[in-house]
Length: 370
Image 1: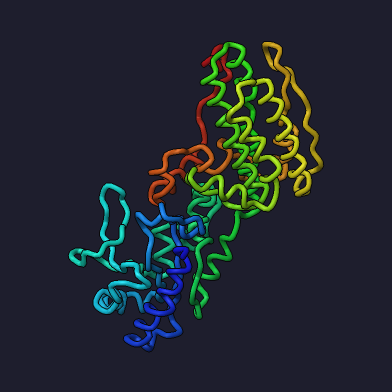
Image 2: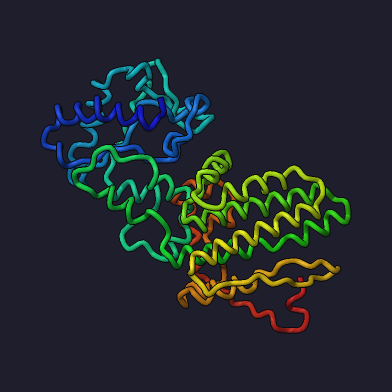
């Protein structure tokens, strides 16, 4: 049984009944579901996934007043009245400090239930740093993984409708943020000359590392072209990628081939063909004038494709505030530290970087030399 199905049965057959039996006045005033970061949220859970954050569990969202009045009492009631097992799975958990996650246990001592009780506003603030009037800068700071956590999973019960409305609101990026992230994504593909230089020098490790980075950027751009959030961990990239409605089946096998090939000239040829496929997909979106890739000659005699036309067209389509940004893209496109991207109190700090303006002028002779 998949974890999301187990969670829904657990909520419908046990948790909701206990709440409504013990707090009948809450019947139409709370919501239940399962959101978060686990494999079960995306439907990718298997036997390996059951070692942590898997089992009978769910979220409950109360109104602000009801949370202040009843949250502790509800948690205590669940602690006392939840069955110790549900469909053969333990409902008790302990914190594994090494994993930094909750794992199921049959040992009742020092264990807790895994029913998260919150309000919609509290949940959004703590987990995602989302408040009313979500700003342009906050859209640039929030990682797409966090938006996946909010918009995937499932809501089992929501007569109030608040959490459902929020999920709909954040279903995908606003158009201007989407285009701004595509601007960065296209600009990040300009490293084929480095692949060539490294291969000419017979530095295969360097060549392969650069190819790997380019392929990751292609995959991320493919998510953007499909208007789908990409996951924040590599273990889900392949499954989510091949589930995309467009492009993945066409370019995926070519990308996988590039990862194992030793002929870098052939790799460059394949990747340039992939770029053309991605450009066709961009043109199909009709968000800019039709773009044609041109070639450019770089130093040392390497000829490659130029993305200048698409970068200019995307930039022209942006509002002035984004067009004048000194840093392109969302922070999850150029930050790789998961400790920053997981915790909302960390990634929101980058809001100040987007707002900051450089006060250095590099216009003197020698100033531009690094």
